[in-house]
Structure formats: C-alpha cells, structure tokens
Image (cartoon, rainbow, N blue to C red):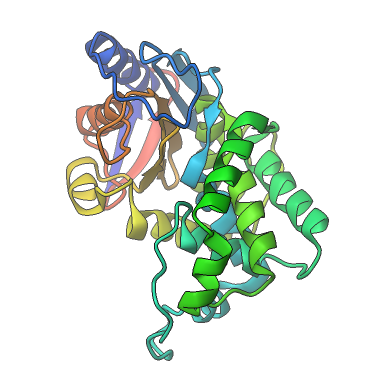
Length: 311
C-alpha cells in the first residue's frame, strides 16, 4: 500500500500547528536554562530529500540535554553493532539481570554508561572529539558548548557526589567514572537549534545519509535500531501515551526541544521552553502530535509514504 502526500499539505500542517499553538502560554521553564523565553516557539521539518520546512524560532539555541543520547546511540551502534551493544547494555536475552543497584544521580546513569563505552578508552580528548564530530555529521553543522550550563551541571554533580554514588552502587562503566560523567555532562550542555535536530533526525530517517549535506554518516542498516531505541525510551516520562497518540519515535528534555524520526520520510523537531512538571516540552510535543495526526502519519503504519513535490 502506498500513500502520496502533497508537499503543500506538509507545509500546511506545519503552519497550522504553529498558528494554533503559538498563543498558548507555558511558564514552567527549566531553572537550568538562563534567559529562556517561554514565548519562543519553532517547528522544523526536514525531508529525506533535503527539503526543509520551518516556521517560527527554529534558529534559537537551547541545551540538547538528554537528546544527546540519540547521536550517542548511533555512534555506539556504529562502533559495536547491534548484538554487541545489547550485551553491553545488559538488555540482551542471553544476559542475566545486573546485580548492581540503580543509582539516583542528577545526570542520566544510562547516558554516563553509554559515554563510557565510546571508543577509544582512557582518552577523553579523542572520545570527546569523536562524539562532537559525529553530531556535526548528523546535524550538518556544529553544536555550541554552553559554558555556564556546563559549569552549573558540573557543580550539581560535585554536590551530589555522583562519582562516589556510582561506585557505591557498583554501577558498571566501561571507562573511568569521573571522565564518563564529565563527558556526558558536557554533551548535555551543548546548545543546538530545532533545525539542527530536524536535520539529525532526517539523517536517521534517510538511512544514515545526511539529506542536507549529502554525507554518508553511518551504515544505513543501523537506522532501524536507532529509531527502535527512540521508540523504546520515548519522550521524558511519556513513552507509551506518546507513541499511541503520535505514532512518532521521539525524545525530549529540559532544554525545550523535542525531535522525532519518521523512517523513510522525515525528521521533525520543535522548540518551546515551557515544560510540564516532569520536564516535557508542552507546545513542542503538541505541535509534533498535531502534524502527525493531521497528515494521518505513523511510524507503525503499513503504508509506504511518498511526498509529491509538485502538489
């Protein structure tokens, strides 16, 4: 079964979502983000052929936060492959349940462990350069380190004794704990834009080829696993209802961004810093859900979607 959607319908859905939601007021902005303006709102859609549709504040910079796990997962899949990475994560069916505790720390313990597994081991500078270069390839442009946020997050980690907490819990890492915590914290403090996130998602949707730059970033056979990981973890504290309601594998975090992948069709992202108490961007999530429902799209649908640029 095939569905043909006119490019004008995509543009219309983005425009409608923006216009319908732009006046909604959300004031619960993360205290971690300085000078965040809750009036800012933008939607960016990038198709797998490189077509860019955008509306509003898509060039406003904001912290990527835990959305950094998305490029991190792709990097690890590229380094290890699916089966080996599942073993390392402890999620393989052949593995026994880990006996270590699940430590409660201010940064994601899963993000720290994932960062610790990035090769090379014991070389923080090379590891960091590899992580950032991979993000640049996925986004087509460079994120920017927010030094103030990085310091703030680092201070919180120090106050909460994150490294000691991980050690006491016996939480297994593949590299030095202090290094891994620092490198993941630094990733969270990278500033990006909604358009950059949409390009990154479109690169996954296009089986590893950045549709804007044309660069082959990763093996296309891994794209389904990247998308599957997004679906498995989902937006912050809203995985199941989000997937049922929007049908879009996506991830969000405290910076106000949300990004989703529709395989073979597009990457889509939104920015709106007003959050729910659990850290879920309100307008951004509503915008993506509106667009998916308006167009009758779902990552779990059976129809092959083709975009007609002549309509």
